[in-house]
Every structure is written in structure tokens, then in C-alpha cells.
Length: 318
Image (cartoon, rainbow, N blue to C red; front, side):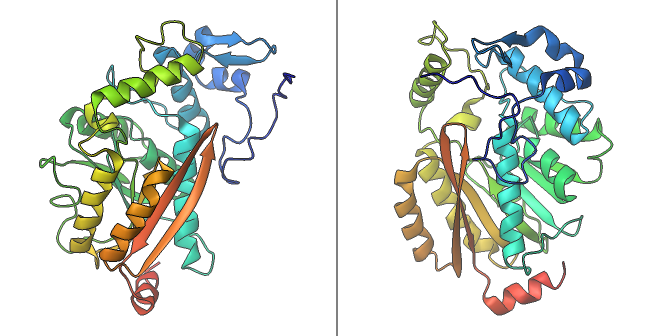
């Protein structure tokens, strides 16, 4: 039997510090970003929502959320680029904060002394936005797409809260992850990555068709990507396993310049192979956290090459 949701109902699958644990308060969001009003509809339960199959509605919602919760006054992305769901992005940042706290007497290190590298920052720059706002961290974002890098830096320069705290760098070598992005003598406390998890355009299209069918879009066989996404944002040779294989291989070259490396893993069937890969890489420690947003379960796998003594020395700088 269908149950009418409570507008204040808590989404308790999200991280306890996630600001998006409750249903969207559309009057407040519209007050923050008036253009959202035209996209708000009432569902069969009598609750306000937006049509998530409409890319313009999703973008307007994101603009409202970023203004209301993260003080981002100017945010936009080029047409067709990934417009990510904000709650899931926030969850990764909060679990990352827990990871850093776990080696720091359960105290989350905050401020610009903590430096994070976002692999695949995208045109949207959302992970750095949330990390700066929530914890005051310093961010470098990398991407192989010049348009994405240009737009990410445009967002930074258009919002005073981000200036001098976020920098997007272009990765000129599309087969590299960390090379030419991490500078000599540069150190990062954490790397994060939401890798493209499809292995081909066809696989990405099939996934979009399923998503649109679930959203009730009658033209699901010819989907408009509601969250958008370019080639490098949605698929890569070898899918997420291929991407993470390259990430692990390159992480060995920067084992003393990064404390924690991490990546989202979308498909649980890939975990055992990734754990075996990390064992062969002779990492010192592996951590896994499970996060749930909506009906989707993802895992964050993190690894470090630092010994306990090296870890203690590192966190002395926090």
C-alpha cells in the first residue's frame, strides 16, 4: 500500500552530517533561487517536487541548493555537462572527513591546512564547493576536458567563498591520473574520485534508459540525460575497473605525497578484484565505507601507503 511521505521525513540513509537528510523545502529553496519556481510540481501525494527527467529542472534545483546551503551565488554549467545530484556528492565529502578523523583521534581536521585533490572535478566543481563550505579545506581539481576546467575556474572566480581555496588544473595526458597534476614536493591529505563507471557509450545509454524508465519518462528509449554528462564523465575504456587500475598503479608513484587515496566504487562485483589489486600494490592499509543515496548503494574505497609512524608524523601538521 502506498504511503504518503511526510515532507519533514528524514532520509536516514544519508550521512548524519549531510544537510540534505530531509525532504526538499521548496518554499525556502525558491526564496533562495526564484527561477526554481517554474519547475516545481505537485506529485500524487500532494507534495512538491521537480521533474527529475527534465535537465533544466535538475539544474535549477542544484542552483537553489548551492545557494541555500553553500553560499554559492553564481553557478552554471555548459549545456550537456554533468549536473550531479548534490546529496550524494555531500555524502562522499562527509565520509572523507570521517576517514581523516579516524587517524586524528576522531577529530575532523579543518581549514586550509587540509589539501584535497578531486580527480575529475568536472565543469560543476561540486565536490570542492561542498568541501570548502563544510570543512574549509583547500582543493585542487583535475580534468581532461578544457571546457570543464575553464568552467570550474569560472565558478571559483565568481564566488568569493571559493577564491584562493580551489584551483582546477587541466590533465593534458588522457591516460594519466596524477602525473603532471601533483607537482613536485606538493602534498595532499586526500584524493577523491567519482570515476566514469560505464565501459562504452552503449552501456551509458542503456543505463540512462533504465533511469528514465524508472522516472516515468515515456520516451525512455530516447533519453535526455537528466544529469547530463560528456564522454569522459560517463564512460571510459575498461569501465570503473580500468580507471581504478590506472589510479592504483599511478598512486604508487606518489605514495609519500598523499596520505589517503580514495575512489567511489559503483558496482559491488568489482570490489574483490580491486582489493586484490591493492594487495599487489603493497598498500599499508585499506578502508571501505558504504553510502546509500536513494535506491543506489556505492562504496568508497580508500588506501594509504604510509606506515603508522609515517601517519603520525603526517598528522602532526594538522
